[in-house]
Length: 293
Image (cartoon, rainbow, N blue to C red; front, side):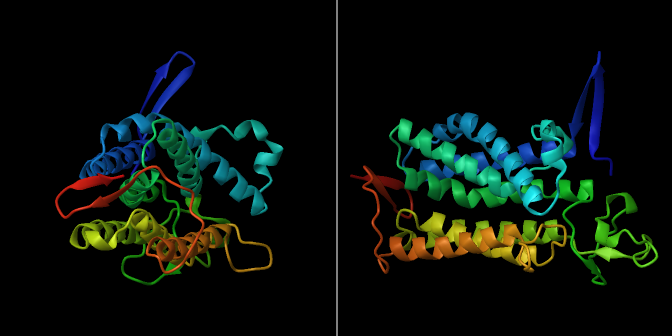
């Protein structure tokens, strides 16, 4: 399948529409729509999602690009050090989900602070649905033949053309194109994300009394961190920390999971942490969200 949907030549400029961009924006739109419903369920104005997106989206793109560049450089790739003008070239490919999350979260923090909104409420509403948005964008990796794993004999292994092979599998005598298949790691992550997000959203509705402010966000950290840690076991393309079999992404994923565990214990009262004083907290009844001063 061609990654390019169509191209239009406008003078010296070529406008290209790619499946990657379309599916990423689809994921963003669907995630934002669900987040809007989640915020309304908590008793807040859902329009804040779409307003905040004007800041979160560009911040996320910048963060995703910078994280990709730093990750590649730490992994020993000198390309961006030798060609710094290529760092902003997002259209050439290279975005990292973690960077998008980090910069998006920073933008959300300042948005909530500016409008005096309950940050826990927005984190609880937005964080779980990011897994849905990410999952919806993952088929683009199949179209681009990227983010695959090691060779496998499992029946769902996928074919990767020689042009899209990473260096470890470019020896076609050892890994023939006709017979070699690879783990579709993007599909594993897509399925895990859909399952994790669905279970979390259902659990919030089934046991609302157990989800104190910040609990859904904590569970997202645990689930998303654990899922990505597992996926990294199938990602030979990821730069490793020098002298270890652990990739930088795996280390961050483990940290996410541990942070989520600590946060969950703190929000449930089993661990005491010095929280900053927040002006508003909220609780959710089985049918409607209510603000509590």
